[in-house]
Image 1 (spheres, each protein chain N blue to C red):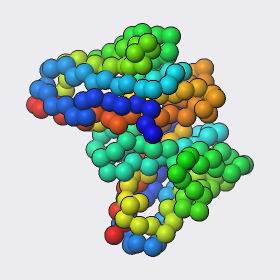
Image 2 (image 1 turned 120 degrees about the vertical axis):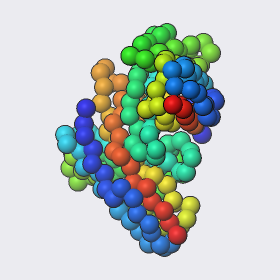
Image 3 (image 1 turned 90 degrees about the horizontal axis):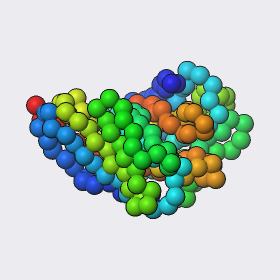
Length: 113
Length: 116
């Protein structure tokens, strides 16, 4: 079963607006990561947040992590048409699990020009 | 980060046939991961391929259906055997990297298989 569940499943916004998507997970994690996938291609790593961190920034990306609620959010500010993609959270439960990543269901983001 | 070449990028296959997907990495890596992504779905880990040992399969995946080879530290293959339309998916290979044991993945571009 999937560790991460994401919402919304799909999001449509205008260029320049912010996009926010959420990820919830079930078990304790070592870190949580976000990936982007364009048009059914390979995934690209965006950002990693460790279990002892609460917020992280990378360019126009802002990730938060609330381990008490077992949830994370990804905010994309000032969105561009090129941000149109599917976004997946992935949880790493640590070496005991072989550092394997378990992916959430994904959020499909459409940024309209 | 590593660069991964995966082929074929796409193929249309007949029911009952088998297809082998190749994954070449431009650097030596210990572990390679094979994922399946069914249409409109998320990624599911099929198996972890370690050089010099048998692949480790996840629940629901078996070696007879998805045999994996890992002859050296830069190459792996995944075969999808005796295909049925339910095997129509994108198959992705990936390798891990990252500081302090964090397993950040780099993915190949994927192999999109359609089984008729």
